[in-house]
Length: 212
Image (cartoon, rainbow, N blue to C red; front, side):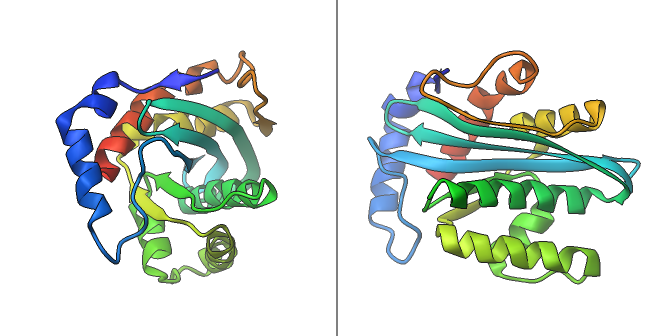
């Protein structure tokens, strides 16, 4: 299954102007380069009751910012039966699960996208959390992020992180953990369908944010 971003994003003057600006911006992470597949991890998590039963969602994708092609690589919807699970714990687990799989696939130079300003800020600033229940999760994520050479951390509002959000809600609604690695033919249909309908808009918004 291949998704394609809006054509104007790859062909419009603002897109190319942003690329030119990034190419000359010294000291920043390497820019999004046209014609090159960039790998991104989108994650989310939540709990029913906070604390309560929890769930997380994670998805790894390849993005070609020139053609707009987005190829899903791996998807996960993980349920947590501990009724003391907080939303922050679930979100950190979504990030951790995605980073573990990225490492297992030998991925590097990842772009990380999430709607938790707290977690994105802590990871980007290398600022350990004060909450004791989050410290171990932070350091596990920090170690994996450094191993994978994370290239950027982007905070998105929830309405632009609907794919991972839908995966987390699937886990909480069913109390079932699922994950699947994508083959050449794309992701399977069925329980994943509702979440995958949001990939287009989520990644379109990320390309706009990342290129300005």
